[in-house]
Length: 365
Ligand SMILES: [Fe+2]
Image 1 (spheres, rainbow, N blue to C red):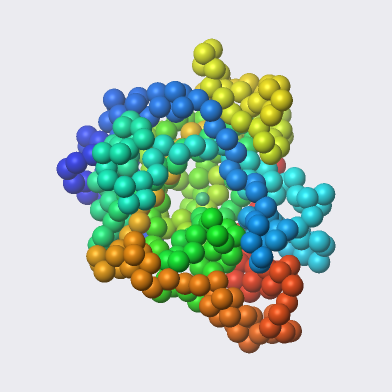
Image 2: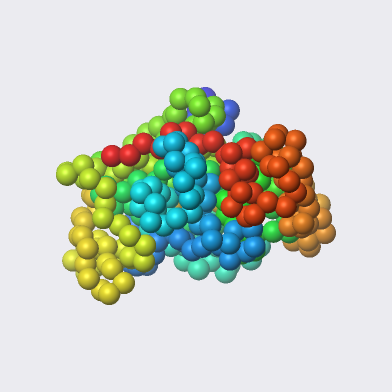
């Protein structure tokens, strides 16, 4: 079904194609606004890799932040009984490249800050895009939508992102205090729904490159994927915390993965070329714009009503780690995945991923 979008920040003749689980917005921006975003991408110029830190909390001690992705990958390869957190493991480099080496930067991250405090005004047409706000209301069935973030992602030739769901948020805990894999698995367990913040994400594609398709699994991890159309200035709006999605490899003539390792940055030069640079300053590879995939993720918090929004802001109904672990332990004991109430953190983490997190198969080059 095609409908005309509302007024406000919207491209001329913008259309929205609706599906039960996602909306396709095409085009997203007017010509001038689109140029503004590309200029901003170049002006920001330096993009760091997604966090590859190890978690420092008790339950996450010694485990990578995206343990669910690593363990799921090892399990898919029949390596689940190996040391699941060992950076010398043969699966580790694949995991790192597929899940933690994406180059990114924040164009806007408002939380509950007022609109006039935007970091980059060029990102405002995205941040306050009417089709995203009204679409989020409809898709997530939550009338109060607060746009909070615009996050840029860049992929170079040979780079991809494996199937995953995004990091969930809950009242009372956050990624600064809780390992990312635990937040994600908590959502897949459905045991903490009443504390979960609904987040809508619009993945915006802004340039044309070969490969790099965005695929999502709106009917579940074991069902067929849907590929977003490969057109610049389009967006897919959906609940990326709930539905698996991935980015297929950006075309690279030799068909090999990009030679990426932790700690590198991607930089735009005066010659209008992109460079992957090592921490010691050495240039690893150089890319033209056509060999780079540029997308921006819009995020909006979606609330049932102002009371729910207030509970979020005022922390009046927060989760505690003690409660989370108790509820998970009860469920894992019932499923026969734990033998006692006090497992070590690796046993607990493996049981949690085994119980709740099963991604679509990871495809490599
Ligand atoms: Fe994602």
